[in-house]
Length: 183
Image (cartoon, rainbow, N blue to C red; front, side, top):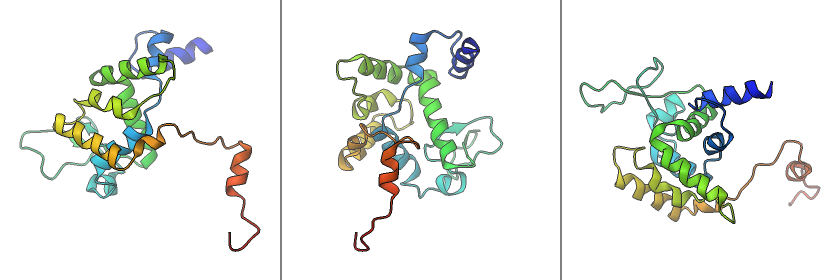
């Protein structure tokens, strides 16, 4: 059963076999600072037509999907669409899968794995930005824009955050209504 699970995960990430070292490079976090910057840049802070009509936060292109949105200023002869999603969460999942599986982002995964193996194991979104040079046709201008978004908005503060487990006792504390009406 475990072997079948590993084979399924390996296949999902484009790996020929379930090699644990390779899988760990593909199945890892995307730093929140990086995801926030890219979603802000790609979706115009959630105001773009793609974000509003297609729940598309990361500007991912598709050449196969019938459900994608055609960019209004797409060059003549181009066939791509921008992927559309039923839910925002689906957009985030597709983004993570894209960075974790697509061959264009191998350098991203290699740098992230090196950070993971470092003494402090800090995954630094700002340091990973240059590895995404192929994410946008804008190249270096795109990289500079992401770095500026991270810096100005202090997104790196989110890189060490952890989501609370639903069963975590602290969740009750955070959701409990205070007794004092002025609280």
